[in-house]
Image 1: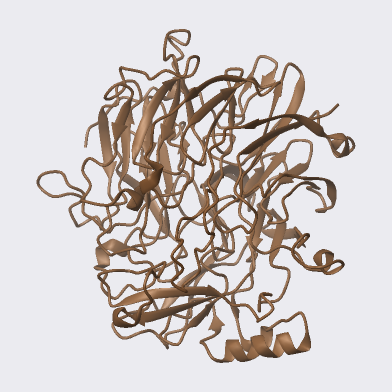
Image 2: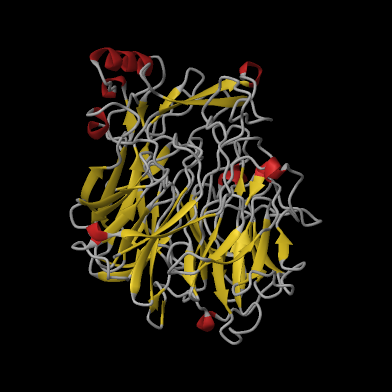
Length: 640
């Protein structure tokens, strides 16, 4: 590994939302390098939010319809998935920047949405399966800001490249790598294009740009390595790489090829410039749902929060949230920074939500829990031949889980008495029980499901009130392992090379209603210092999907996205499949405003001020788990 001197004192992205002159910017994907989705803008308040109007809308044309069949194991020939438009734009240097589902980057005027420029990395979309781009990153050379490429927009692409783009012109920065781009496929084992994609915005600390990638880890055990790599942001020169193997194992072979099958870092990385830390959320090891063939070193860093030294890539500390994860309960969301006073002592914290609906509050300097966590015995019966199980799993005592931890036939729910009994019979035919009941040949109910609990969009954290806002899924899924000879053709999770494939389906009645009880989506506020849930409410509706009045009685379940909070006490979130964008009161969860978008906003909104006016932006373009159509709408709202 190569050491470099990091100019932390000159880093442009600070720990809170940047204020430039009279403009409050949104300079990083999560609002700051440590996430939080928090804006200090205060012009829009609880009193006037109901007056919001559309200020402008931008459309790129970059979307495709697809079949929306991620859980369809019927052998449907149409396997092209719709685009997922999950971007959170930036507003920095008086410009709004965002990437499309096809990886094109647009630069817009903040007050009108007029195009300044567009950059096309020319990704071959015909070979890409799931399409996604959560955001781009921004870096400013404080010593030479006005020069060409003195402001750089960094883009990660679906075909595994990183681009450096001049923020003013949209031209490539020729001094970065090979004419403005580097390829992260170098050093990886042979793989198909769809197996390795950069879907989250690269992290930036000092003069380094750092990225992991999404690896299709349910496809085969020897998928490309989940290595995290750092490059010089000026030159594109490789600086260090961290491949999540056991500390006693080599991360790469003698020619520099990284050991395959390691856990990947697909979600958003956080950086702490003051402490020189890069904090990464890891996935679980390949293949997702069967760990009998995994060597122990591949599980060592799976489903963990890991702090790396920014200068060297060496591990500073790590905390594992799931041992030997065979439930796909990987870490889905950006580690979020906030300073908390707990037991009379103020500590820099990292808050980590999980697919289990559990929240881990860790000391950012040591990785030790700031609220108590206990190891509890978990189910040890029902695993498939060849599997082994961890005898215990960690359970935070505070905050309380945001999701029920397990399901039984007695929890069955239905729209009618007949529907309920049908659901009860369905649950009795498969394995049910507490969380961490292992996947089985007869089928196991996962509740929380591999979609969550919480997922990539949460949380938002009010840095002043020390309140976390998180949206949570509450829908049960059946996960059934099948011997490879019995696997359906075209199964979504084939796990080639292991003994079993995975057949996963939502647990629903003949009427299509979930068998798990409503609400199927909730929004919650959590006091991070006390560890208490302040409120938790259903959100979303089934408008347009079931007749009135049922759409108001039953809330949405297939939600994907996340919240944003403002200093004035407002929560903004889309996420639900009814296509509405809403504002809530952070004090009690009361709905203050809603606006029907052209399709679902399965993303995280953001806010900024420009020329004295506050804007709220949200991207609406659907998701491959949403029943609403794909689209390409970036919409800005402001007061009249």
